[in-house]
Structures are given as structure tokens and as C-alpha cells.
Length: 127
Image 1 (cartoon, rainbow, N blue to C red):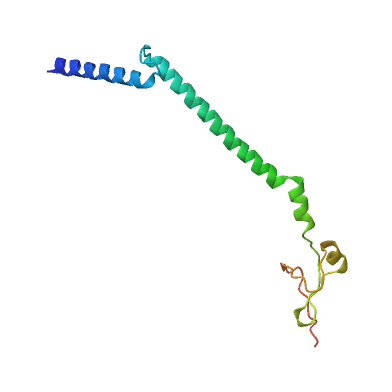
Image 2 (cartoon, rainbow, N blue to C red; image 1 turned 120 degrees about the horizontal axis):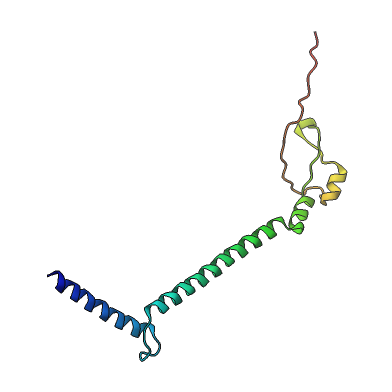
């Protein structure tokens, strides 16, 4: 029984290799070399992996270059300002003239304000 199974298995493998070789070769009259086919597939996979790795690396490099390019950083720095001011009556604050000029701000321009308290005014206790 085991002998029959081995013979059938060998016959099935032979038929598979014949069918596979005919499908793998452009010219069916050529002799199929499974080792050559395996090496060829391995080389093609290796090349595909190299291309994929290079593409990913290139995308990462481009992203980093764009993020930290001098032009991008400089333009962001030029559109922000930091200064100290005092809260006036009715909670109003003033933007110093030099800051308004540097940023090109005019009356009624809308701006974003981030408030970070630095020092609270101490009230004098009158006794």
C-alpha cells in the first residue's frame, strides 16, 4: 500500500512538473530546470523588494526635506510674533506698532491669540 502511494505521488509530481514547465517556459520545447526557475523567481523578488525599499526611503527623505526645508521654516517664523502686553480696560490688549508692521496687520484684520499668563498684578492691601 505504501509503495503504491509513493508511486502515485511520484507520478503526480512528474505530471505537475511537466505542466508547470510548459506554463513557465515561453518555448515548450525547452527543457525545464526547476532550480533555474527558482533562482530566477528569487532574483525577481529581490529586485522588487529593493525597488520597494528605495521608493519608501525616497518618500521618507522627501517628507523630511519638505518639513525642514529652510523656506518652509523661515516662512512659518515670519508669520508669527511673540511679545508681552498688558490687559487694559474691558479686557483689551494692544499689539505693538512694530509687531503690526512686521506682520502687515491693519485695523480690523483677524488674528489668533494664544494667552499665557506671565505675571499677575499684585494688589496692595490697604489697612
